[in-house]
Structures are given as structure tokens and as C-alpha cells.
Image 1: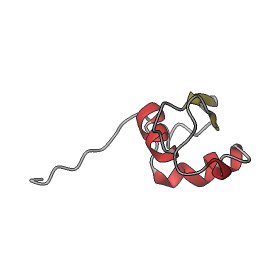
Image 2: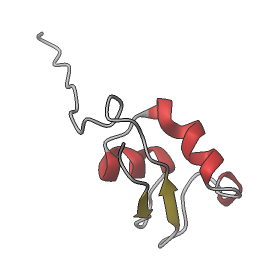
Image 3: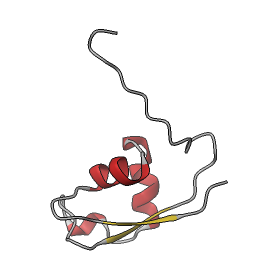
Image 4: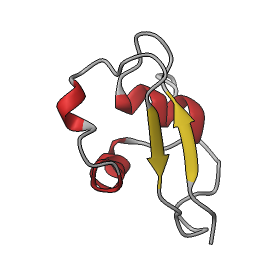
Length: 74
């Protein structure tokens, strides 16, 4: 099992962008992250610069670090 991560928001970050860019996680993880960070949803769509977001540990099967890319011509 992976350990929890601490991510820091950059200027203009939304939660889903931060999770995708820094942890490789998709929208199916948003609820779990919001549950682990009380009050995070109250900050609005754009996270304030420097906001710390805790990403709870995930099982190895959901946190492989592999991103699937679908190309239009596939």
C-alpha cells in the first residue's frame, strides 16, 4: 500500500488538475481526496496558491502510476 501524499497547489490550480498533474489521479478520486481534506471544497474552484492537499494512501492496484492515453486515430 502506498503512503499518503502532500501536494501543493500552484497558481490557477483546480483540484482535478493538481491531482492529475502531481499524482496521476483522475476524477474518480476527487471524493476520497475531498473527504480527507475538510473545508477544501469551501475554497472554491481555483485553489489558493500554496494550498496543501493531502492525498490518502491508495492500494497498489489503483496507484500504478501508469496513465492511459487514447489517441483519436486508435
